[in-house]
Length: 121
Image 1 (cartoon, one colour):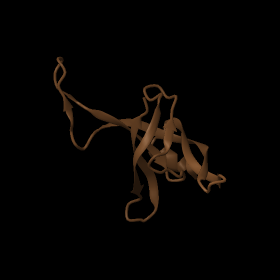
Image 2 (cartoon, rainbow, N blue to C red):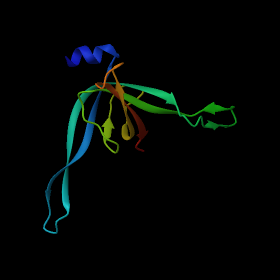
Image 3 (tube, rainbow, N blue to C red):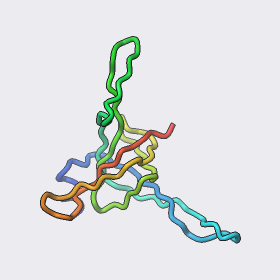
Image 4 (cartoon, rainbow, N blue to C red):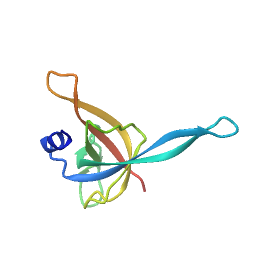
């Protein structure tokens, strides 16, 4: 079923999703977290920001674009998660800044997620 769902929207890339999970508490009652990593098919792309920011270097005006990723509905993803990639053009580490569920038409079932990303420098 996963391959059918991912084939629908051309998930031609792969990524690792890293999330922090609370595993215990220390002697002071503060939570202790560990990284949990999940591999997933995905599709990276660039989109023009909704605020249509323009930069004007000496070479002329340019629209600023931002990276994003499409993930299957079978993954668990939240703002603040880290996504790593080794795909050409997207071989970086990113922080998820927004998660948008995309639903099947006329249904309440999630088809996939579109996530806005910010590169970690």
